[in-house]
Amino acid sequence: MKEIELLIRLHDLDLLLKELGSPERRKSFQSIGFKIKDPTKKLAQAREKLARKIPKPLLARYERIRQRYERALAPVIGGICYGCFIRLPSEMSTRRDEVQSCPNCGRIIYWLE
View 1 (tube, rainbow, N blue to C red):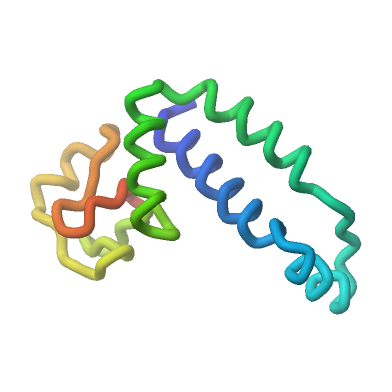
View 2: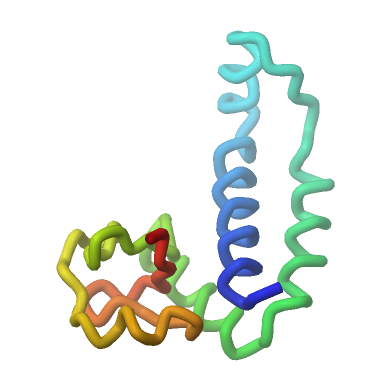
C-alpha cells in the first residue's frame, strides 16, 4: 500500500476519534439512531497499528501538520489545494506518486483526478 493511502486512512481514523471522542458527541449520534458504545479504545488500537506501517519521518511530519490544522491532508482537484484553495504549480502534478505538501498551507496533498 502506498504511503499516501496509509496517511489518508490514518487521517480518517483521527477525524473519527475526534468526532466520537466526547460523551456529548456520542449522545448526539445515539439520539439520531446510531448505536455507539465507546469505540475509542478499538479505534485507538487500529490507529496505533496503522501508524506503525508509516515511515517515522512521514508520521512525524503528519503529526506536526495535524497540530496546526484540524485536517492535515487536503485533496487536490483541478490543480487546486482544497486545504487553502490556492492553485498549485503545474509541475507538482507530474510527481503525483510522491508525498507532497502544498507550498502555501503546508498540508500533505493527494490528487483526486
